[in-house]
Image 1: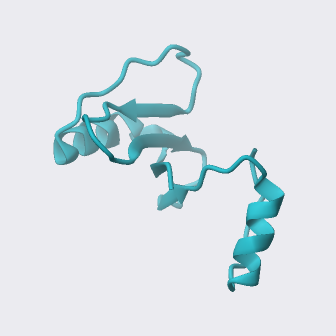
Image 2 (image 1 turned 60 degrees about the vertical axis):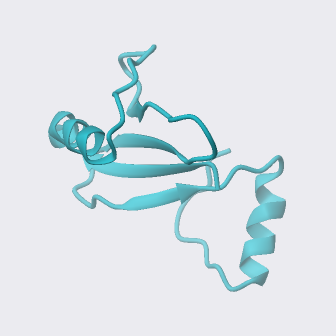
Length: 92
């Protein structure tokens, strides 16, 4: 696992970023691309997950973990053999 992503409806992303920043005690990382749908929170020293808030167009806010891999399809097939099911498009 490499990151925790918190999905937030676009119209509430600013208040969600402020809340999660305070909840985790992490500063908000300035965006390098203002059009990006991702806002990062600062990562403390030591082993930890990166935390990002993702602006979404639907109203279904949720949390999800990203798994980092060099070969997405190989990792997906491995997880499916363990019992996982595909729900959506896989981004690589």
